[in-house]
Image 1: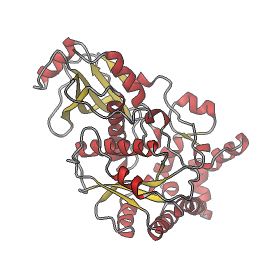
Image 2 (image 1 turned 120 degrees about the vertical axis):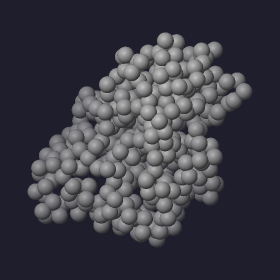
Image 3 (image 1 turned 60 degrees about the vertical axis):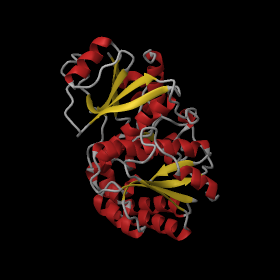
Image 4 (image 1 turned 135 degrees about the vertical axis):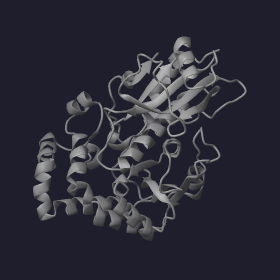
Length: 378
């Protein structure tokens, strides 16, 4: 018996809670539910067809992706991988997922699907079927709705050895034996953490001085709740600075606009912002690092890396721990290489962040009003 379509659409709504760079939510998906579309798709792509299998093709939403920096392409794949992992996590334990196609392995033909959405550029196809002989863990499904990116103060409370063991043993549903060859590291050495905070203070100004990158970031900043609700993506200044009066928010809106920032940078405003940001990481309880074993990971590895990241994040949530990504240190190749050297990281890091127990767990979570507006059902 085929997986109930309502279960899939509910799962995709839950999956929209996944994290993404700038909260741009760059995912799109096409659900092939009808026999006609599944048969046409399988025949065109030389894939086995089964009456009891539903096919979902995941892709980048070309209207929502970040494009300014080369590392943004990796971040988009990580975001989509997290979205896929979130879907699988939300489904019933007896629903068996399987990757049947991934970008770069072979060409994908979508020509038989006449109603293919033009905004969806395929990266991975997944089959779903009921299988009573296989059961996945679903214990972290409830953590999807409570997961947030907490950027404010963390308690000065160490990560216990047991928490570290649980976190580093986390694996994605579709890569239980780490075929992707990812490395996980939790850094608790105060000297290394302080060095990381200083690194941000010394180098994070590039985020504000790189005009194109800052222009794109600024476009995702939301200055009022109405602004956030109308866009359905991005992040509010209060998520970074805490509660802030409307008049002060509007002042920041002017001061941080790309044109004004270029002028203020002449008086080292960007350096001041970088130093303030670095201080937020200097006294972190721990850092979490995920790395590729290759400088040039393929698309499948990047997608699975996003799955691992979401699995880790949900495990953190179950332990009442929070993450604050510091992707600013990885988006530029120069600073990434310098960071690898500073922290003696052997492999290429694709995620690094502060981990600990947040003092103020925020409830702000901007999402598109209709979580299914990036989903096409055929």
